[in-house]
Length: 254
Image 1: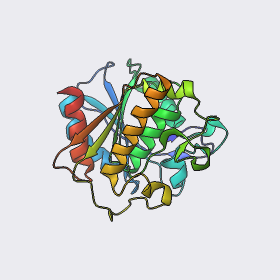
Image 2: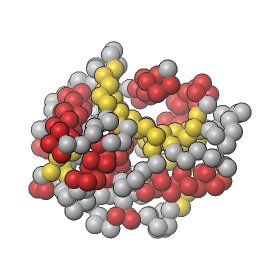
Image 3: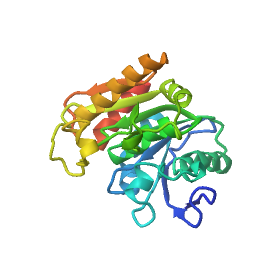
Image 4: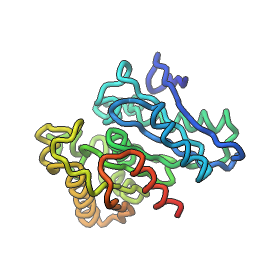
């Protein structure tokens, strides 16, 4: 259990992890963000083989439904004007705790999220001021906070009070991989957000991810900013956490 009193006072966060035998202080830490089912234990189990193969310290914090609403998990609680209460900070603070407890020397970590977890990840990379992320993967998100300014649509688009142009340019310079399964195209898929704002992004997860990335390209050009984000389309894969995780690791290490 992990307690982050500065961000979510009074809450205990279960942390599921796997540390392969033989890894040392220079271990690569991979945070994995679970889906809307909140089954962090199952996500940890799905990553055990990957952890062994690539020598990863896999960490899956559990944002249980009883403690975190959809807005508090997928959206990181960014509607709260108190930035210190944004739940993205939990990852940064948990990383500090892991470094202390496990003697980890690495100063940066990797971040992967699938579906609802991908919603968390891409917003994390936009809203956090200076995340210590080496590379992040947002796989098959159901909807996005678009990297453009439209105050009336917040938090499905940006407002300058939370992310101004300078911070957005910094976010564009980070290594975010938008991963999309080419078969994740069911407009009636379970869990696919159906709000008017989400539907305006596309008919399915694949279309929405492409739309998000294309808007980022346009906004970066408009701001004369460097865009280091990548769009990776994964053939013959639908809404599968395991297959998208495998594709992410092939992209990262192979």
